[in-house]
Length: 199
Image 1 (cartoon, helix red, strand yellow):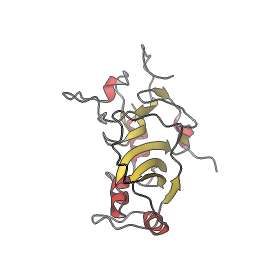
Image 2 (image 1 turned 90 degrees about the vertical axis):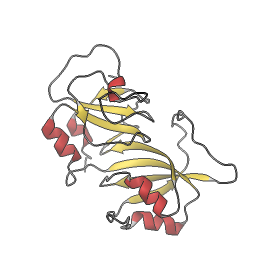
Image 3 (image 1 turned 60 degrees about the horizontal axis):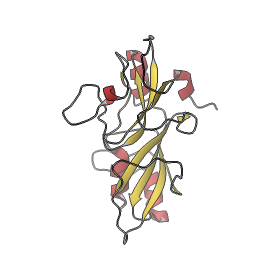
C-alpha cells in the first residue's frame, strides 16, 4: 500500500519508503526540515539503517527491535545498490579503484561492484534539480556495496576524482525500485523474506 490515509497498526511491521531528497532520516520534527513523520504516519516504527538527507531512495523502517538490529548489523547487511550521478566521466582506472579495496583514511572499503550506466530514463526529477555545468560532463554509475559506512559512496567517488552530484539508493537485497515501484514519499509494507536474494 502506498502511503496516506488511516493505517491499522500491525506488530512486526516492515515498511519500504522511497525517501525524498532533503528529508531527514528521523521522526522527530525539525524547524524548516521535512522528516520521516511527514511521509509515514505509522506509530512506533524506526529506520533500519540510514540514508543521508541529501540522498534519495529506498529506506527500511520497522517496529521490531530485533529485526532492526538484524537488518542494520554490519555482519548481516543486505547488499545495497546506489545510482550515482558524478561530476566527470570515469575511466577504467577509476572504476577499478572503486571496485577494489579503497583507503578512505579512517577505513578501507570492502570490494564492491561499480559500473558505468546510461542515465536512468525512469528516474524522477530531483527537487531542486542538480546544478550542472555545460563545460563539465556528468555520468552515472551503479555501485553495489555489502557494507554501508557514513557517506561511504560519496567519499569513494570523491577519492577517485568523481564528486557525487546525486545519489539514489535503488535496491536493498532483492527489493528494488524495479520490483517495488514507489515514487518519492510513497511507502508500502513488505515481508522481511522479500529482502533475501534467491540463490
